[in-house]
Image (cartoon, rainbow, N blue to C red; front, side, top):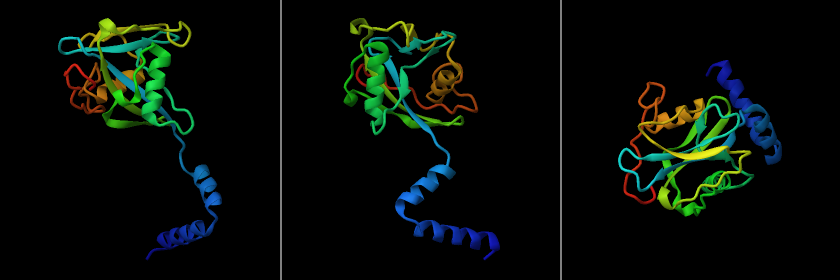
Length: 184
């Protein structure tokens, strides 16, 4: 056994002898911290292939993004996604109508994690309501003709095989959501 492994073993022995509360505080100081958010990929259930996606333009308005936001303390990600979707677009879906995307969690290098969910609604019967402050505009866009996206949105959509970053080496694509007309 080398010296490094032995010292590491002693450090763990000391750590596990500390009271739980002290261990937890120490781990929080030493380990990286992440903000956790929830994102919804909302598809138009009525759109012909390849489909349409709801995007938002938010201040400063230099690109389009997805309905998303940070989770509240102890809020389940799926409930946070439903809440943010409603707050930003007026689309009121029960959390049970959201399906975890695959992959469901995206860890960003800059210190946050997005939990991603999908759903489908009929756009012709779905009223979009924006507040003009946090969200300037909400619109449906064909998947094969997306507007200028924010860099984070472009990266995230690329992971799901959507948009200009789809299939790039940095963004392995996943299969697109099913076009079954129901919740995807």
